[in-house]
Length: 221
Length: 270
Image (cartoon, rainbow over all chains, first blue to last red; front, side):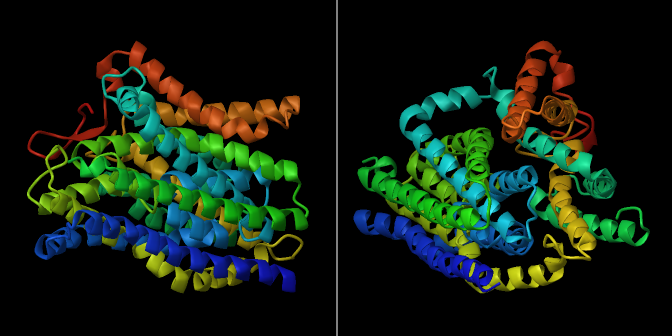
């Protein structure tokens, strides 16, 4: 019991240190640029830009931290938020690895699997972007250009990714799946432009409430 | 002077890449060691690494495309850095546009001055840093609360049924958001729901179910970790095939779209 606590606690300890270090690295980028080129921002324009950006990012940040933290495990959470692209990459990756391994997210084994999956995904993504920019920069744009025959493949990554991931969950838990999808579709009929990040909040609440109702009605056990 | 793609910027990008890789390796090694102690087989851990890497390839290329799309105004390096740390495919373009708008310019502007560029870089950094400020305070608290709620979900304990159901329901809730968007959502800067989104969604589902069945029937344990990446690439292949073979009036058809006045109407093409 003590050991278990030690591992999770050490994840939180190191996670905090890495988060603060990441903040420093993040701010080094504009700082070093400004110092090197003696080009500090115009405060008035900076405020105007920041006021446009902050509502986009900070609101999403609060929703994302509250929604994703319980699902990603301690190590996975710190790692995911530093490397970003959580909804479209890290979270599906962790969910898929957990599903395949058969461990529960709330167990320590699940924590280990999701951390390993997210770390692997983060390294892959970082290297793909680095190699892509350095070696294939302009030719990648040719592949994803709307005129390219391969463009549709990249336009529809999200339905391909969540279709594949969803199928393995839905076949196991189809009774739990009908209500949240239906709720999502109905909300989209009335609020068609809703970002998926916000919609996640709606569908998780719908899904959990639906599951509770089905459990109480003894439809799922 | 090309300050956007200068040696300093590349050095900063290299530092960011090394930081992200080292951090990921650090957590992976810690988790791996703990996993072995908990009795997880190293083959399971290895398969997790390989299937997660494969699973990440296609989305990573989409992220790379976003980096390159931002390159004309911001150079290659700043978008590269932004999408390697915290960055998000969906918000980064919006954030860059908003910052450039404040400068009364746009993403197609290739003539930013160093001061304008610095303003954009600072604004994007301040905007994106917030999760890292929140996490050290909130992460442990959220986990403790959730574990209390789901503690009944641990293996071997009784009364775990509800905990398991709620955990599964939360995961399904996440996927339902994206799936319902592919069925009925409308996007201004991406593909709205229509023939193609539903066709790709269904293809991915059919591939996954078929491959799962194949694994079970033929007892192909080694194929199991690759089912999802294969299904995803298969569905992307179907997207290309449909686009090439089916008339564009059908492939381009979306349930709803914005007309030239910016009003939402039923029907239309992407």
